[in-house]
Structures are given as C-alpha cells and as structure tokens.
Image 1: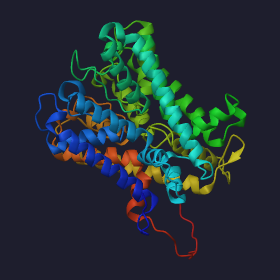
Image 2 (image 1 turned 180 degrees about the vertical axis):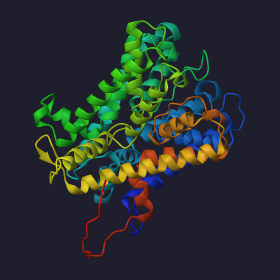
Image 3 (image 1 turned 120 degrees about the horizontal axis):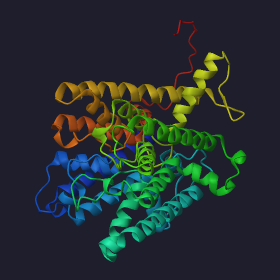
Image 4 (image 1 turned 120 degrees about the vertical axis):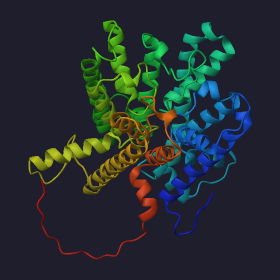
Length: 446
C-alpha cells in the first residue's frame, strides 16, 4: 500500500482508510444474509451501523441481536476489531504475514495511527499492540465464559464471551443481549459484581492507550520511571474515574439508583463513571438520570479515553494540558509543568485546538438536530456528546431520529474516531508554511 501523491498526507490516508472500511461494512450489512429475516437493510441504517461499529461507538438503530443474523453480527464485530486497533495495524499485519518489508512512510503512518510518539521501534510496539490486544480480549472472553456457559451452553457461551470481550476492550458498546429483550445492554447484570468488574477492567485497559501499555510493560509499576505521557494518562484517568464514581453516587442515589442496595448503588455508579469514558454499555437506563447525572455523563463522554487507545473524546491528556495551562496562567507562570517536566508549547496549542473543534462541533450539531427533531435539548445534547465521544450511550432517541439527524451523527462518530484536529487537517493541512514572522501585538483576554 503506497500513497506517493503529495496530497496524500498521513491524516488524509487515515481518514480515507476508515471511510473505505465503513463503506465496505455498509455494503455487507445491506445484504439480505446480514439480517435475521433475510431482507435488505436500507443504506442509511447500514452505513449508520457500519460507522458506529468501525468508529467503536455503539449507537444503534436496530438491536444487534434481534435484527442482525450471525453473519451480520460477525461483520459488526470485525468492524469493531478493525476500528479498535486501527486499519493501519491491520494493513501492517497483512504485510508482515506476507513477509513484505514495511516502508518508512508506512511506519510513519502506523506511528500516527496508533499514537506512538517515536518512529524508532514502531514495529516492536506494533507487535506488542497485537499481542496485548489478543491477550486481554482472550482473558476477558475466558472470564466471561466462566460466568455464562452454564446458562448458554458451550458454543453460545464462547460466541457471547468473545463478542462482548472484543466489544468491551475496543470500547465499542455493541451487545447481543437482546435474546431476552431488545436494547437492554447489561441491565441484567446490574447487581452482578463479577461480570461488571470484567467489563470495567476491559474498558479501562482498552482506553489507556497502546503507548501506556508499552511503558507499563517495560517499567512494571515503577511510576517514577514512566514517560510523562503515561504519568498524565494514569493520573487523569484515576481522578476522572474516582470523581465520577463519587458524583454519580451522590447525584443518582435517589434517582437512577433509587431502590437499590448500597452495594448495587456503588457498582452502578462506578460502572456509569467508567462506561461514559467511551464504552457505551449501561447497567441502568440513561433516560432515568437526573439533570446533574446527565450533565456529568456529557462531560465524561466528551473527555473520553486516552490518545492511541480504542477510546474517543478529546482525550485525557488534552484535558490535563488545558487545566495545567489554566493554573499556569493564573499563577502568571511562563511555562506549563507536570511531574517536574515542561510541556512543549506546540502541545498546548494542539490541546486548545482540539477542545475548540470539539466544543464548536458539539454546539453546532446540537442546534441542528434540535431544529429537526422534537426531543428535549437534554436528550439531543446527550446523543451528540455520545456520538462525537464514540461512546454509544443514549436516552432512547437513536431509533426515532430522521435520516438527516442520522447523517449528522454519522459525521460526528467518524470525526470522533479519527479526531477533530485530524479531520480539520484533512481539509487544510499543508506540507510547508511560508517562513514569514508577522509583527506581534497584545490583545486583552478574560
């Protein structure tokens, strides 16, 4: 696979790759063999599902179990796996299988696609990525199988376990629990601590990022030896999970968690805190959330996981850099520091650019859908945040949306997976910039 034309920048190749995979997935899902009743699925619903799967989101217009046949479900889980590890990883894996030499350009693409910060050793990181993905998904499937095989039998138990392990690790949120009731996700397991812990562990590990895995594999639990990126990801992720857990427990004890035991309330609030970080599974009905709980969910969905992971959102590192910069500005500090290291100015600019793009896109999309649909702004904003954060949680309006609103959500899921800044670079990226330094002038801020 070679792209030699000067207009094929890395961002454009990644965006095009995801687009072509989505189109292929949509074509396969349109076929009668993909639906349970052997009927054609219209293009809009097929491409919505393909986008949601490839962009590891989890928003669905049909219940995955009741509408899609076994073939259709296999197409969906394949798209989830490709979308989770990145299409460049799949291409590199095929090239390696056929013993084809990986070019410098392809190594650079793999580095950008998977969030690796160094070109040197990128193939070694790629191998760790594949082995790590296989290991965690296999362990998740084994643990889930141990909990469901007595109910489903061996063959169905294996299939259900593998499907949900891949979906959870890739932070996709697709489930096939509709065999008892459509659209129920994991609500049957709301009081099952063991099953919830397996899902939560897979979601967290998948959302940390491949660079963090590499760091942890080299230095184990010696935090002081970790790269700055790993330290920020781990610290921010811990704070967000713990703060979300406490706040959801406070906000929802008398609302969505009402009537539950203390143990179930603690499990439910922790699961909600973790799943809103782009996973999309739910153990409680999202439309039963209080206004405070819904706003907290919106915030966590927009933040998402970490760079180079299976998760979406603005990313934990972006949030950390923005907050650290705000504190530095308040102290009138010249530099932004974290863990005794200075953060480069270009990274700070990128963080604010990502935040600006996401917030602008969310507000515009919310206004557009509000103009089209009769639903409350609370429900629409929740849907928009879920789509661009590639989360997949919904307050139940996805299946009721018009074609135009679905197209908007498709765009949001797509841009959320490849990244808002990357999407802008697809249209405006230039190979070189004229070396002109304009005169500076001060303006008033705040």
